[in-house]
Image (cartoon, rainbow, N blue to C red; front, side, top):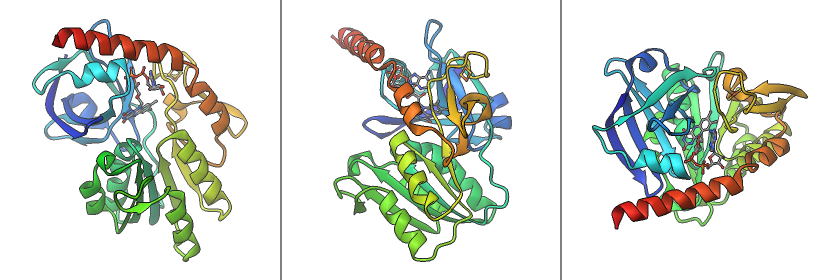
Length: 280
Ligand SMILES: Cc1cc2nc3c(=O)[nH]c(=O)nc-3n(C[C@H](O)[C@H](O)[C@H](O)COP(=O)(O)OP(=O)(O)OC[C@H]3O[C@@H](n4cnc5c(N)ncnc54)[C@H](O)[C@@H]3O)c2cc1C
Ligand code: FES
């Protein structure tokens, strides 16, 4: 069992938790993920390592409440326990030889992007961060990004915070104004990463994306997380989650991501009803 050492709501749909898991904290690196189960009969879900404290033995996770399991996790209070917390899994984000980077984060993907930005900053890189959200109520981690970025641009779809529009607009402007990035690292919704890669490709700026397909075992055995990258089959859990953005077949990934939509909708409704009954 793993204790929830700290819990904080970042906005109405995103929660941050520090989980006491010293063995995971000892080895975790930016870009890796864990798989957890909230309770004994729970489903396994992957979440990215959003930070770690090797001395305190805690691992930070930041999750969006989107369905059954994340609702159950969010229902746990500080001091309570979760059943399993396995990791670190996947490959760390490559940071070698990056002197200047543009980090592009979208929505809860910013939680995944933050430790990468922090790590690159700590290694001496110049970090520009472009983070996008639907509106100002959904903005998360602004202070944390400001602290590790030489340049920070916030975008919202409705213009209620920062500039109005999508992250690819300032990305294009920065590249056209002469910023020379060794790498662009994009983490967010599939459609965002697809368009970031399409933008950077025309300027020849190397681009890494972090893929988050359905994962089951997280060890390369089940094939659930397969993707086509450069015409070859790859498993996001062991070969990724980071891949060359120019090589990922995003259209196939988007089709696979929506395959369980109907089942997930039913689960969400069931969980909502269960919670409603518990409260009544
Ligand atoms: C490597 C990786 C890292 C991730 N990191 C984060 C993170 O840091 N923060 C965060 O909020 N989310 C992250 N996700 C997504 C997260 O796993 C899903 O939001 C979560 O599984 C939803 O479960 P649910 O039962 O609450 O929702 P459901 O209603 O079951 O699903 C909602 C959506 O979540 C995704 N999903 C569901 N089950 C899985 C699964 N087993 N594996 C992958 N995706 C699934 C699907 O896109 C689905 O449409 C990550 C996914 C991957 C693969
Ligand atoms: S989750 Fe099973 S192969 Fe990757």
